Length: 258
Image 1 (cartoon, rainbow, N blue to C red):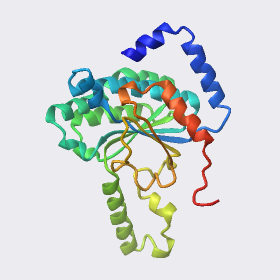
Image 2 (cartoon, helix red, strand yellow):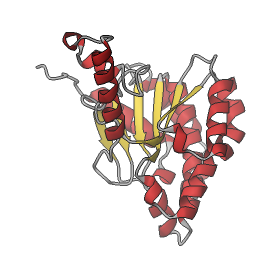
Image 3 (cartoon, rainbow, N blue to C red):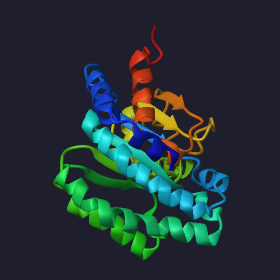
């Protein structure tokens, strides 16, 4: 709310933001940005609101972030929406989070279609409530012909489970003769992961001040640049995303070399 008031008073905000975007686009932007959207509950608690209010506000930020990522020419935006461990949270909170895809995509899907955004999801679908899965699959199907930004939701996703499943598939293919042990390398193993169709993230952003990966894309983030901020996700603005990308552009990525 306070961000909205501040932005509303500054008539030059939109032009200033546009200029900053144009400057950033003069340099290479990360092809794949992954975000751990953390701090919804704490945002709500600070305002004496129920935790679900933070999740609702956080979805508005997803909308703004997606639009800006598309504008910047980012190819893939992966958002950690719900982990395999998040089922441990209070039942009413989990139920509300599972209703958000229907609400969010119900209102935002026409924009995603018109803006050439393609929706994807990685995670374990069989544990999702039917209404949640229907909303996700409708968005995936309705945007399947788009070829712009890929908006990839990590929903009911856990990296350790993903890696273990990949190992099991590798062993199965090895036993059947489909895969030779000598052919197994990083690239081949990556093809067994849920992100087989994506490049590894160039930039990881985590909000709320926590400095850990929380079982998120452990294999894929091996050489990603990390950017952490104390800002809670519902307060994450376009300016924060631009700041993260500016920081990324100033770093030298050596991938183990000199």
